Length: 382
Image (spheres, rainbow, N blue to C red):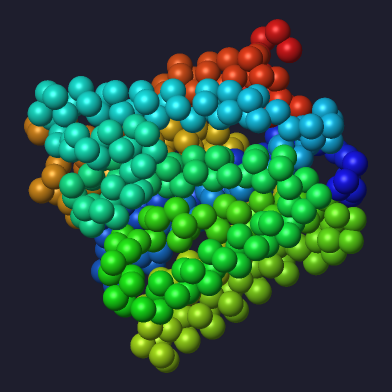
């Protein structure tokens, strides 16, 4: 094997990741919801920075997808790109297409406003560039969240090829890509004219300006297979070390942005891209720590299990300040608390058990993975 593996144990199902998924999806929901205030207390922080839940999702995907591919290579001595895309197709597309199908019906019935161009771009996972092009969230309100799914799909087109074609130099290739995208993004954000040309505030949805949030975690997954780095991680990548370090880094970046009168979004975005993967790895490698045990409590694990369906359907009910684009009566009643949350959880559970899980099992049956996931996801024949 060209890559010596520190631990041949397969990644398998990691309950902690479901806890992270739950935190990620609910931070996004409260980011999209209206600002809640009780006297001097409000949820303004999560309302302003809850979008970083997407970066948390990216970190999880980058680490997990790359780890699973490396497990397959270790077990089968090769990576089957065909099998990878069969499983990804069954995992991602049916629930997404179900949402878009229901949205189309609601649009035709004039219950909600659905732009045809936004809908079509979301269908083929180009919604992020459509949002940049129109530079308006309202035009594609109910498909706006497909921008992150588009970036993930673009990442899936890149990573397997790199692992297969550059087997001996995959670390060098990923480091080069990370550096190139980082320099490119820095130059874009440093020049206001270029930034406006690239989409202004919506430019953060462009794949080339966001994909490091997936590539760096993938690189980290590869490095964890190296004995030296693995031993270092076992010793130092622990929540009680990583969390204070991230607090210091984020605090320093906030202070720097205030001092230099800069927008802190780019600085915080970069810190999240490179910081969140270490936080996730710290709980993966140390499952007995207090944070890992907290993330593995049953309610969080269940919400994490259905988090993809929650993410898909929440945009239909949580429209935040965009009330002028609300649904027609009586559907608009489901776009206000507490009915919005009830509707999301009910539909997400139905989507998971009736659509998402059966298709995941189908994908595993058509292309058996080298690393088993949850037992309830495995085909009955296995």
